[in-house]
Structures are given as structure tokens and as C-alpha cells.
Length: 253
Image (tube, rainbow, N blue to C red; front, side, top):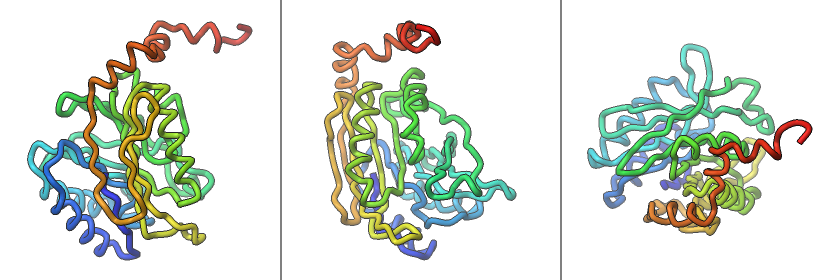
């Protein structure tokens, strides 16, 4: 999880990201935060060019989850991220529910459902920022087999501890890992500071690795066996697959 100190200029943010990624050890997966190029819309071609530059710095077997960015696709605006492996773009994911609180619904279109990818023996998917608030979307990913949910965000400091709790709940109720990458050293337009706090939540609801407020790369080693161990004790997904929840959720029940 790369936690950059985001500047006001797109070229400086790309330079900083290149430096951070080039200095990290070899890993299976790299997650960037939301709007790491800046809190503004960029042409889709420029975003893809930036992602290609970052992906080229990684070993061929490393998967890059390119965070998310406000992109202009022919006059249609989305918050979108891409999965890349070296020179290949494998799939994209989008913010399904733009935030009303910060005015995203005035200009962003609702995104399409995220795919579930297989990589290095894992199944994973991504939810962009506020989409983590929607338990149905996280549950859908888990029911598609996801063991790891990636959550690129740009969350202000006042929400940091709340976001950790939200990540822990989503991890526990779906018995998955949740990895969150945030920016730092920046601010919302209204002045609220963004101060990092990237983290991993474990399938049993505990917190794993947690970053401070510094610019950093947060490293975590995930054990897929923990997912299986927790699911033997907590059959939440199996109950959902069997339709057990309908007894409690159907009208008139």
C-alpha cells in the first residue's frame, strides 16, 4: 500500500509515486490510493500513461492496482482504477456510488461493478473509497470468491479511525482481508487534512499493518490460510449462499 504525500501538481505527484515504487522491495501486489495524481479530473489517456510508467517499474509478476482517479472519457467522468501486470492492462474498476457529501454526484457517473481477479493464488477485487460503505457490494465480491478486497481512498483525518472500524467490519462479516491505501500530506478543498493511516484489516476483524501520517510504503504479508480458518468458525458467506438470510430479510417475515 503506497501512501504518498500528495502535492498540488500532477507532474510532481507522478514523480513522487515513481520514486516510492522504484524503492520498494519485490512484492506480489501494489495498491495505490484514490486520486494520487491530484483531486481533479484528468484525460483517460494521461491516467493510463501514468499507470504504464508505474507498472514498468515493477517486476513482471507483480500486480498493480492503480488506485483510482477522476477520469474524463470523452466527456463522461468516472472515478476509475485499473489492474495492470507489467505492460498489460487486465481490467478496470470504478466507483459505483459517487459521494454525495463531497459533491461527486454533480459530475461523476455511477461506475460498473468491479471484477474479481485471480493473482498469485488469490482472488481479489477493489472497491473505490465510499463504496466500502455499501455492505452489499463487498458481500457480492466475497460471494464471487474474493479473499482480499482493495480499497483505494482519500479520507480526511477526522474519518481515519472510523475508516479503520469500517474496514474491520467489512473484513469480519465477509471473512476477507481488506487493504486500504490513503494519501497523506494533503487536504480537501474545505481545508480538512488528509494524513494517511493506510491499513490492513484481517478476516477475523483484527487490524494488521497500520501506517502513520508519514509518506511511506506499508508492507503486509497476508496468509490465505487465515481466511479458511476463520470461515470454518464463521460461516457467514455459506449462510448467504444457501439463502439462509432470506428468512430474516423477506417482507412479512
